[in-house]
Image 1: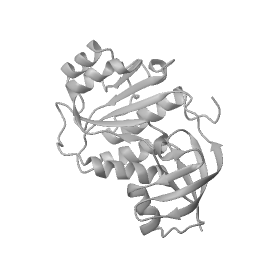
Image 2: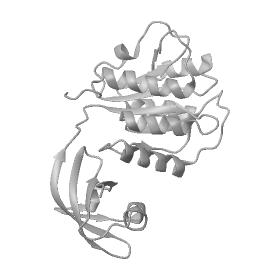
Image 3: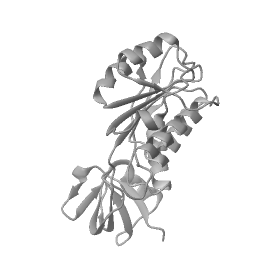
Length: 241
């Protein structure tokens, strides 16, 4: 039987014992039909795989015993993607691929040229969870609720690098802008892009405006390209740091 992966909170781990509850418990017991003695990999978003055995299954929780701990992935930089809300559920693609790449947080936002207004946070979280499991990630990217442009600008002080992708920038590359960053924000707009006033406000709030190259990219593509370039420059795609 394939050994499945389940995410828990750090508080669900007590010594060598793991308690699984909520949606992950339901998935383990009702969907996958796990029984006592089955093996599982438990993940607590710390880069460590906990290879475990199910020891008991109750009405609402399952208990597992940790057999082995394996350090798989150590992050040296945190990356948050602020992605403009997209039409026709295209943000689903951004969430899925962002998780595969290893983004830490995804925050959708509404700006002047955003055509969409609705965002289903529960749906996005499920996509993130499924993607993390499918690609064997030891980290579960956090998806936050929809925010507005001015609130996003206020968040900039939380980061040591804020990278703002803009089609009219011709010189500054992401690799140069993120150098030395440990807590990086990447801003990518919706289908209609940003207004000159929005770009000016971003600059005034500490963002560095960057180019993604000479080709025009779709908004969802721009998010993934930005993440890839930034993570590569931060050495977060390397095998060793």
